Structures are given as C-alpha cells and as structure tokens.
Image 1 (spheres, rainbow, N blue to C red):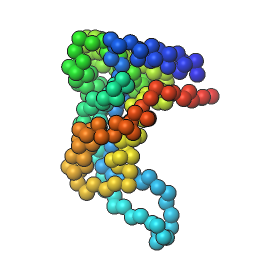
Image 2 (image 1 turned 30 degrees about the vertical axis):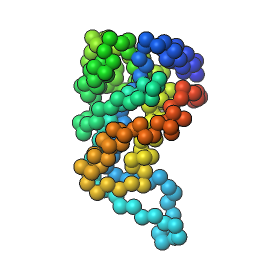
Image 3 (image 1 turned 180 degrees about the vertical axis):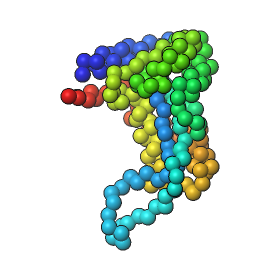
Image 4 (image 1 turned 90 degrees about the horizontal axis):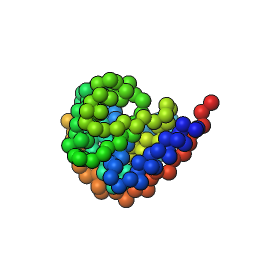
Length: 197
C-alpha cells in the first residue's frame, strides 16, 4: 500500500507540471475472435443470442501511450510480437511526437519494459521511465482505455476476415475523438489502492 501511495504522489507531481509530458504506456492484445460479454444460458432459451466465432489465435498488438492532460492516445498497431524492439520503436515515435519536451512514461514491470535495450534507448532519447510498483495495474490509466476499447471492438462482435478486423481496429483509433465525452469520465486520476496480502 505504501509503495502505491508513493507512486500516486509522484504521478500527481509529474502531472501538475506543464512543461512535462506524462504518458501512461501499456500494450493491448486483441485476438481475432469474439469476446462473450454476457452470461451463458441453455441453448434455445428465450433471449439467447448466437454469435459466430473464429478458429485460430491470430491477434493484433497495440502499443499505446495515453496523455492524461488531453486524453490523446498515441498508438502503434502491429501483428509482430511485443518485445523490447517494438517498445523502442514506439519510444522513438513518442519522441518524434513530443520533440524538445521532457517526457515521463509510466509503465509496468513487463520484461520488455525493463530490458537493457529498452532502458538504454529511453535514456538516449531523454525519456524517463517511471515503473509502477509490482501488481499495480490499477495505477496505469491506459488499462481503463483498453477495457473500453475491448468493449467497443470485440465484445459480442464477429469479424469474418482478419483483414476486416484490422481495418476496424485502425478505424477505431483514427476516430477515437468521437468517444471523448465517455473517455473523460473514466480516464481520471482517481486511483483505488488494491490491498494485497
């Protein structure tokens, strides 16, 4: 709890400084398949909804960074595995977007985030990586965006072809502004501390 409280205080301090770009970073993995978002019930019962599903485990990986000040999201969509190389590629994109700015990226303790390749490149780019305490996904606001994204894109939704699925994902992020009103209500720095034993 103490670690989480300290992290919250530090994040709030960063966020209050106008000359610092504070970003919440995490990848999201969307599988080309339907996510059932309702309860199961016996076949044939009134109100049963049937949804097709896809074979296989093909998926899209989305690396994203959320700027809490304006709820703007920077993304990199790829079919390639998420690893240190992908993260560094994304850090370069962030640096290009915010040149001559001090950048703080809040992120979790995934291996590819802690990899020497990632931390060394972040330092070369002048980006500070702020690692959250272990087991604290509640402190990474972009997790709320990913939950919202899954609801909009894959909950009870069937895409026959992977190409169609990819296009819909790209279209969603290109038009994310249409959800600004909804996003502003969930992307607030009101954190709940989760107690662990």
